[in-house]
Length: 222
Image (cartoon, rainbow, N blue to C red; front, top):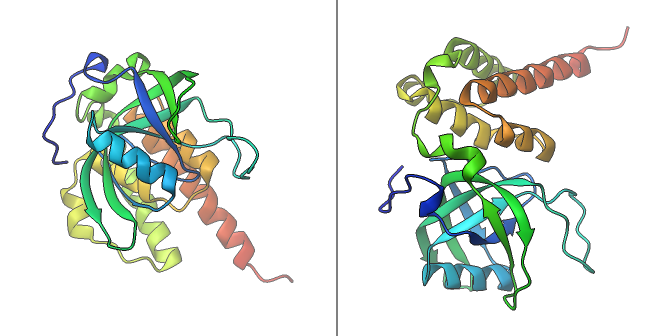
């Protein structure tokens, strides 16, 4: 993760941040998430944060169903990211990358004149997020790798095993969690895991469940 600004704790982050609700998306501390921004309200959000603290809160809506009449309720926990890459496409879109800083809990949504939503948030419950690679030694790396291998073989997914072998446990678990093809509920469970060890266990459990379901679906009826 290449980032110019250091965030050593919750006091280094703004108390009110713009919120980007995105179903099925997952950002984790020190992870990098590329995004294609095209909606006018979020184009305005990007322009505003570039001029300010460059921090955006990525969070999932509670429901996958959009309601044009009102803003969707939000999950209680999201992850703040710093805008670390930005490019204009020439056709009105922005291509950006958010680099994860720390998770937060929403305290309240504030009234605002901006076209995008803003919330007062609390980072304190996730102070451990500010310490890189915390809890790595407790991760069952062999279990993660075994499950990744089984998933790749079952779904014919190419894997750069050299990079996997070289990745530290935090980078490995968080990258696999972010890239995993699972739904919003599973992604939220991975986000809210209280430690890296538990996140790895949740990832393995979800993957094993999906593999077992795939084997059942592939079994011909007798």
